[in-house]
Length: 337
Image 1 (cartoon, helix red, strand yellow):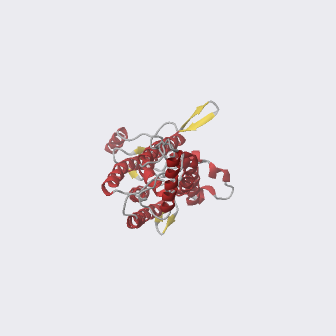
Image 2: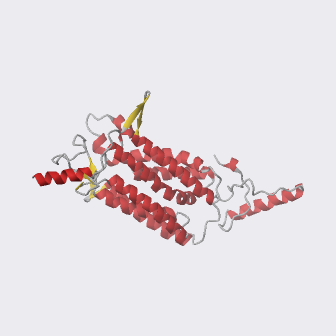
Image 3: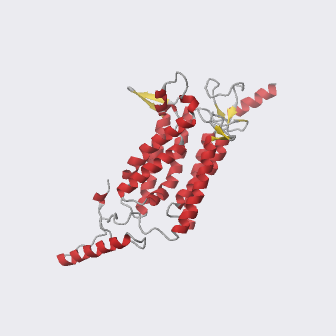
């Protein structure tokens, strides 16, 4: 018995402690660490996506026109998915339905955010004139960075941990935590699934960037690689979590979602690689191109300038029927929202 106690103390000495706080008060406002982690992830993803879009020829800052739609709808989708996939937590006799809106308590499903964010991104891309698949490829590795950052919020909230473990990097959870399983010793350690997913996601960034360069992934194929990578990791991490979840045919809801993500990623890569074997001619939709400030050529002769515009208009008409190399750009940044 004494030896068992010594082993437990030894494990605790090398384990991962849970934070002593999950929020702090700033004047009349309560700031939750969970929200800060999500916000930091959004900012990082925006910066990375903007740089990748700019390298593809898009106007600097055009990503803001897209995320104004993608982020709010992504948050709404994340919450709706979580609530619907955990109905027992929110819909019961005497339940306060307003709790379905309390996102600061945790419960923002990534798969829901992907669905809602995709709808928002599509709307934003249409308004900004950016090809949806171009944006999807640009944002794919940035999503993994954002998700890795957001997973820190689960650590602060002391939630979504895994099965009990004797590994030295086990996570300490206080027995007073409502999620602590009944009947286990107070010094039980748990798999830090938040840390596993952070490592998997950051490794995925390197893998996806390598595949993108190696195989010239375009037209949504980088997004497909992201869905496969994330789905593979999530299907495993989800299977060792012990938080309550709806079960269908013996499998947790989010495992089904992860498997669906893998299948969708494969379909996107196979279909798009067959439909678009070449490189993208432009990040913009035909007729919505942006002219860089130093790319224009001025003419003193007004007739020559008129001829140039006529030629550009004819090229734009032809571009509506083909995706051959782009015609001279005619639109300006004023065409986007």
